[in-house]
Every structure is written in C-alpha cells, then in structure tokens.
Image (cartoon, rainbow, N blue to C red; front, top):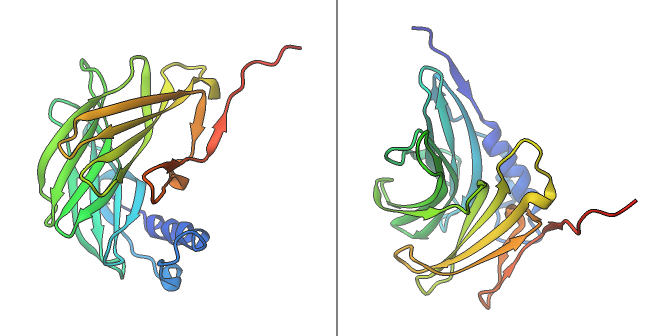
Length: 235
C-alpha cells in the first residue's frame, strides 16, 4: 500500500509568527519562540491545525483535524508540546456516531487537566459542538455535546476559563448555503458551569469575529474584535 507522510511544520512556524506579533499583548511569551520549528507527522492523511494556546510551563497545545486518505472519516486531535516544541503526546479525538470531527481549540485548565472544544457532523445526525476533558496523559475523561443553532455551521470556537469553575464557550457561526455573506455570520457566547451545562447563552447577529484576538479581561468581561454588517445600502 502506498504510504505518504506529509509534514506540517508550518504549525509552529505560524505559531511563532502569531506570538511574535502579539508580544505587546502577551509579555510572557519567550522572545526566542521564532527561532525553532518542529515537524509534526501523520501517516496517509490530510491534516491541519486550527487553534493554539500556551500552557503554564511555556509549552503549547494545538488542536486540529486529520483526514486519512483511505477512509471517509475526519478526526480531531490535540497535540501537547513542551517549551522546545517537542511532542509530549498527540491524541486523536472522535465523537461516537459522527464521521467528522474537528478540534478548534484546546486549553490547559490545571496541571493535569485539558479542555478541548470543537465541531462534529454526521450523515444522518444534526451537527453539534462538543467539549472534551483530557487528563495529563491525554486520555478523555468526560465529554459534553452542545447544540448548534438550526441552519448554521460552526467555523471556529474557543474556550475561556473564569477561575470559578465556569467558562465561556465562544462560537463563530455561519448560515448553511452556497451564497452566504457577512450578514449570515453570527457570534454565540455561552456561559457554562464546570460540568458543561449552559447557564446563559447570547447570540450576536451579523458579526464576523476574529477569535484569535478575543481577550478575557480581569473582571470576567470579554473583548471581541471583528466587523459587523450594517445591511444593504440602497442605490
């Protein structure tokens, strides 16, 4: 069987660029981060990274997807890296009864717990958002499914821990259809408790947000950058 190994070292090259451009916002980012890159290999696949976060030990978590050439399945993954960019572990994430799974973001909750958020979809099932909890070895200990607003698809999401056990699950949504534009985009912000139960949910219509620049402020409020669509301007 033909074997192909594709490398996407660009994950960490792009990570270095992102962090270097964000140094004014994140003063704890080591200045030498741009000086190394590491190849990350998956076999017989098409793969890509979605989200990147920094751990308390200055290592990194990467969330993404793997689509193997010899199947119709798409799997999520979480990769745990040390401060030198070497892989500690990489775990495939699947949601039962769904053929497609993307991990958009993973974040460290404590020294021995990681949360990852993403999107899954199936042939005869409604698409859904999900959260999985992983222990320090990368094993899934718990998972929670969350609904997607009817007629929407999820193209990005992110988690923000509040320190009291609650956290925000922020999702960028887009209407399903061939001719969508910015007026079909929206931002959903869910406040959840430590068990993943939704305490409050708000949807902001006609918002095209940039989640890599979303910041959680010290008072628990959130700063979101993006653009809005004011509507059609008549001739």
